[in-house]
Image (cartoon, rainbow, N blue to C red; front, side, top):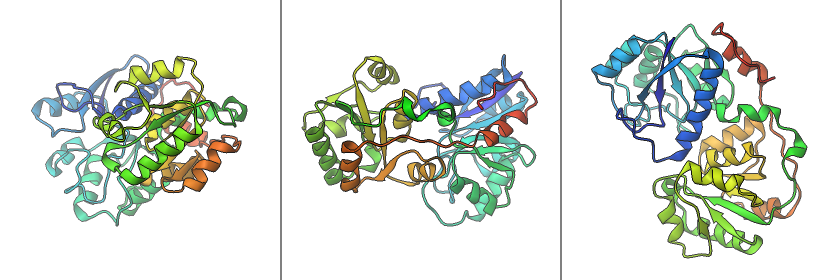
Length: 326
């Protein structure tokens, strides 16, 4: 069985990897779920970051199903902000794409006519879509796309099995920091690093985005910076170093939660805030240093709530064998 995946983790259709390593974290989860549902499927990938050419159009026409895999690809003005680069003309050609853990870009007004047209043309009106928060679900419903389930982000689905005692409630000796190059606030980020330096033995930092490393270095503060690679993060997690995670990177933080690390995700836009409303992951406004210090110093039990019934409802509609996560 051939499946087409519109994939944000590749920058172009030469299959260069996205410089935002959070996209790779998301795609690992998308791949895991598609393989769990369809077993021996062949996944044909098309970048969401570049416009379609005839070769890509032939690709999805030769596939049984078309999925759109993760990240905040949707927006209220898709004629202006094009995370998913499809033209109005090509949306008619796609016609039956299925969302898997997709989100909405920032807090916005109602979708405009262009967005309504392109999404109603490109997305299936028969198959249930999976979105990662209720905000995205409401935006789609506002343009008449009602076949939507709020399943949460697939990166988080394994956390349905999390038991409260699996993540330490008290402060670790060290901390892992992540900042966001395209949401810079020099004063707040400098203050955050200074707080972490005062509270922890060693501050490590992982640069998830292309320019995160340079941004962190510019503070000239005592931070041990890891390499810009997913392997570097995973090696650090497996190293045996005891650490908390604090930072503005959502999916880097989820990677730490999956490894059962105490984590505080700092909100820079709607993503972490909306997912926290739905699932209970621990977040804070990036300027709320009173709460950040309180979280560091005082014990807190991590509780995460995922609607397993909705996740399994989305998965089971494909009438294929899959492992229940309940």
